[in-house]
Length: 396
View (cartoon, rainbow, N blue to C red):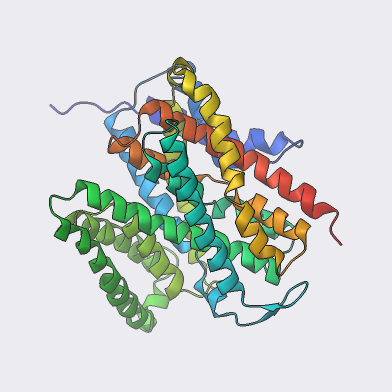
């Protein structure tokens, strides 16, 4: 007789996912991202709080599914149409938003790895690559709502910020996948198998374009069939299996699958974006973030004295690596706008937590450092929007 599954832990997590947005909606002093609230709620339920239950196999399955779906949605959120923008009027001169944003992103990556190496040499961290990746990335999920609130998405300034966040995520995703593949592969030749994801991306993109031209696809896009949603989910699983066979990290594959979906659908008219958001952010990703919080043990962090000062050092580093990029933006925008943009781009959340999860899974960092990184993500996502709003509020 098969073992009976207990649905009580699932119910507790599901109810938590319902309650968190309701509570955060009542907090008017500061804006706290819902995923931050989910992590904190998980901490209360888990090892840092009441420790109500251990994570079971079905919870771990939903946790892993939420993880890959989060990376999939990161790809869906990428709008490559912005890169086709040629010239836009900025506050001082004409600029190419894509080129400016890419320059900002690359300079941040270089400075991040340089600073991470210095921290390793000082004996503060053990793995400078993971920390370098964490300092390099940003959070599109935090950036977009803030830009929408200020009606900045259509401006040259807003596009530079959005593209900067987008490029940071893409670069970090690729570097993380290459790094994980290199340390887990038996031979150097296996590292180059990751390149096969690129032709696979273009093959399925082209096949998708042909499929979208069939009238039956639109006929079955709604009601019970939801053929586009089914196809998107099948594409996600296909790319995950492809990554597993290539022995590479699945987050890049999930991201690529999401990017294909983004390229195949018109962002202005297609309802697939809102549908995938509903499925992802409504069901799967809350399980991931709540379980992340449940597995976070504050006691483990406090037990290591070095973590007491490592958190503020990393938080300082998050903003420090944005100084040179701010100088680059200063060539096109005012000082206040440049600093505000870099403050907003300093927010780190989903991808940072994903990097932390991957690093912990492969033994590259310990549970204590993973917890410190999660606290770093929470702190930056609360502070960065506040700093941005304060700097941008009095701009003319």
